[in-house]
Length: 75
Image (cartoon, rainbow, N blue to C red):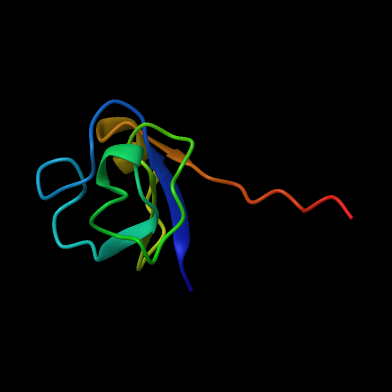
């Protein structure tokens, strides 16, 4: 199961996410779209990431991440 998060103030990386967490982009930031044409371009400055485990509230606060909630598509 993937858990979705949005970095608020800095791009995701080894020092901006909890140690040992597995992550990948779900939506790439506009400035990285050239490197990942397989993914949609995000409307968020630092993209949208998925992690291999759910982050705790202290981790979200420490690393300034927001939990992303998928909205249902309008039909």
